[in-house]
Image (tube, rainbow, N blue to C red; front, side, top):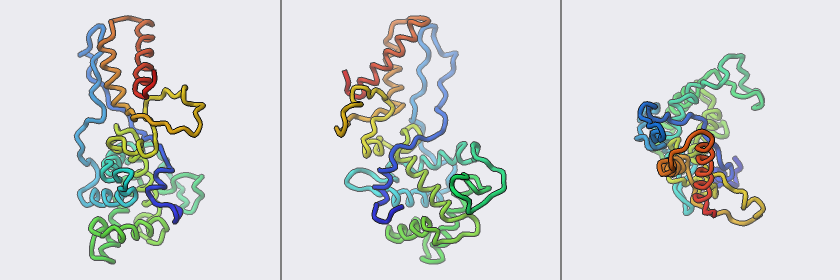
Length: 274
């Protein structure tokens, strides 16, 4: 990370990263009627509770994401945006178990990044070992855990991790930092469905309109601010379900055409188009 660019500015430049977990399932099919399928449960409304991080680990991650994405005049920081909860949910799922990562050697720690991930550790293990090692360093140096340090000392620790100025036996410090930082950026910009980006603060920061992709009338408007109220997957789901319930019962291709027409109309409405 360049020294002359703040962490928050750098996060804004990185922009929109989409998480890779699956969407929640819809309700049971037997509840459907012949003409109206049952509404899917509202997306993104599950109660928030950490399912992987322990209390000391969640305290570490909450403190870290608040320093990586600090609050300022433009909006909330990483903690209020739910970034720590997003990370916890990712660690509880396929990402945490390395379900889609190559997990067989040989491992070449100093290999070029082009060769991909070079550790036998799952992301769950990287976080667990990295947090424990960093807290042990903080205790040995300051007699406090990372989350108990003031902001300036927390920044010193994060910078040391980023620059590989700390050396741990259990996990490479820089690998831990890069994973933490990358997940923090994801959590700040992913659809709120995944637990972060509360109130779409990340999207509002960079002017991203969200899931309603109807931009054709604006493509040629170069260097013109594009100001809309961002629409999440859950927003469109709710609006679309309402429209479907109000739509007369149809069948076959006619219903499919009507569904698509309604979806396009809803997306245009979300973006303030006519």
